[in-house]
Image (tube, rainbow, N blue to C red; front, side, top):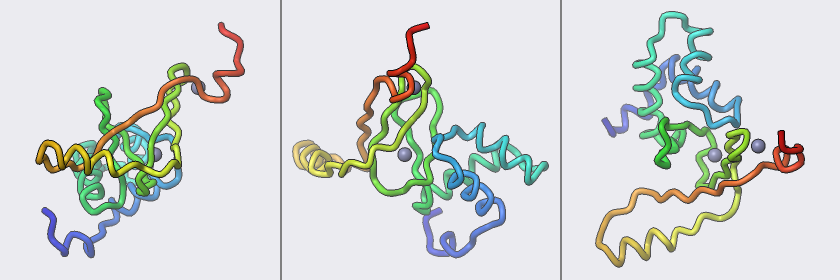
Length: 135
Ligand SMILES: [Zn+2]
Ligand SMILES: [Zn+2]
């Protein structure tokens, strides 16, 4: 499913999904997106939302964050970037540091594997949780 007709065929469903994802910086799960889409398109199914998320990902319109967590999360910020996860409140925050592609190149060179992406996460306390007194 990676032909050029895919790029030009933008359905209403995909427009809505992208609008919703672009309006948040929460890095939501498919379930969260589904709940929002359903408010605009009551008849849409979770499967359809899921399928469109995968198509949008393949089109390069969004990033699927799959860092070994239980659920994939989705991000409309398609520039390569890192993520910080707060271990207290669970918030995922974009880190706009330059991504070090030489790591991928080094691993590809060493192993001969074709590397699609790598995932480096930062974990700790966000600004708000750092200030909050321990409950
Ligand atoms: Zn926090
Ligand atoms: Zn992000």
